[in-house]
Image 1 (cartoon, helix red, strand yellow):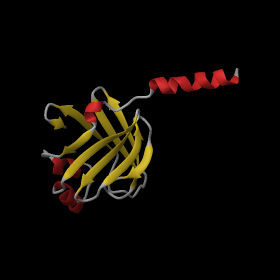
Image 2 (cartoon, rainbow, N blue to C red):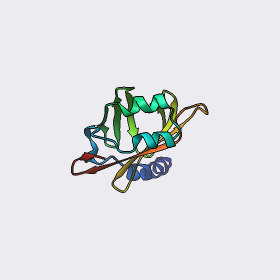
Image 3 (spheres, rainbow, N blue to C red):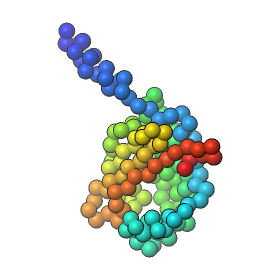
Image 4 (cartoon, rainbow, N blue to C red):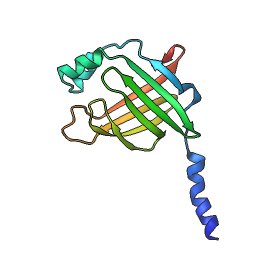
Length: 141
């Protein structure tokens, strides 16, 4: 009887597990940005960080690692970030582009992938942010 209870408790987690849609897997290169400096200014980033980010080359790489897990690489000329074995909806601690630790969560909202960052340090230059990725006919937006 105890085995049945454990199985019934685990079953909802297996059924409810969400996976990243197959179309997101691959490498995507930033083509251009609009109003990026204004956005960074509004978020409170300093001049030097804004300059470095505005000239950065950025690639996003999504690699499937399991039925409900993926690796995410954010490759920039400033700093490369590697998040391993990401599970949608499960928060983890990882580095941000500001070199401080962040609480990070990826989740799907409709056909958009959201990447939420909450800096842990009160002294972090960056603020709470959420990046939204969507696929269109030309790539990742």
